[in-house]
Length: 358
Ligand SMILES: Cc1cc2nc3c(=O)[nH]c(=O)nc-3n(C[C@H](O)[C@H](O)[C@H](O)COP(=O)(O)OP(=O)(O)OC[C@H]3O[C@@H](n4cnc5c(N)ncnc54)[C@H](O)[C@@H]3O)c2cc1C
Image (tube, protein in one colour):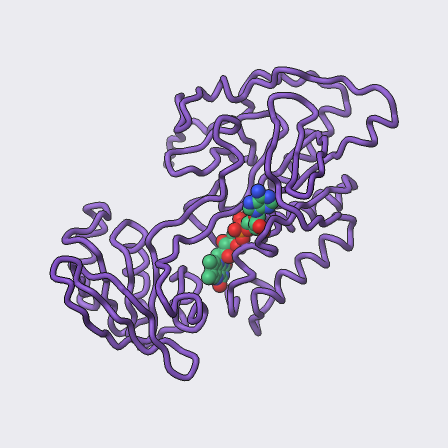
């Protein structure tokens, strides 16, 4: 398979140089697990690796807590029926991971070296770590419109996730910005709650798949406003009240009254460290198997850096747990002296299954 960065998966998987460490002092200077990222996937990987007695090191990155930290209220994370704010949930994740021995470093990873083992992780603050395994939890970020009012009203009517926030818009009027599959899917989802959903798209046709377009056009609650962009998000009393618009063909300006603005103009994985090192799909997500293995033995990935489907706190937490369990198994193999085929891609992709009906 040839990847986006022009390297074959096999090429990228090959670990050229395995350094055998014999002295106890040197052994101790090598980390068991380095976790990159402090979102839900990262802290959960830390919790599980710590409870496996691996004393993991978690490097937070510049966005401490990840996307959760910019979330106003989380109502769909199980165990918190009263809901809680994103920063509160991040603090609980951190406390629980640290309680069992996760070491948290406020730093940013600028380079990983995965063609030798132990791997090397270099950071902005000048640290250089050697590690037996890496769990990548660098997540993703929504593409912003970058218009006035967007930041100010995030969580107060501006949203990037219909599954998370649709519930708050029961009986209300909302706008969806975008024209791809996500915009179409989320607009359809929002019709469960909102009384009216208007899709604003900068062009004169949607990019969404034909089947989604058919559903959008057939839905009585949805209206599409073509050739329209949002130029400013306005609010009153701390909540969204409307948007200023512009027609991309005529330049004509307008104003739409609304209760909410859902923005789906792209989702960007934080993958700057990986081209040429780990296999990425056409959208830039790491390709893992169901055990969260990447194409390099000993490097695992969890959360939105490898999941472009579910994109939830609960799913990212589950994936962080799975990746840490896989890293633990891998370290047990190393410890037991089992031969690791460093040149082989370790991922097992499930072969198509045929349902057998009785
Ligand atoms: C506004 C908003 C509201 C949301 N609301 C909800 C909700 O109500 N319910 C819900 O379930 N989901 C919600 N989500 C989605 C949810 O937040 C994400 O699915 C989840 O945070 C993904 O977790 P993650 O651990 O994969 O990555 P992220 O949360 O994206 O965290 C990534 C982490 O990686 C770090 N990082 C990146 N690059 C580096 C590097 N080079 N070195 C070190 N660290 C690095 C970042 O600093 C960050 O800490 C919301 C998302 C947004 C944007």
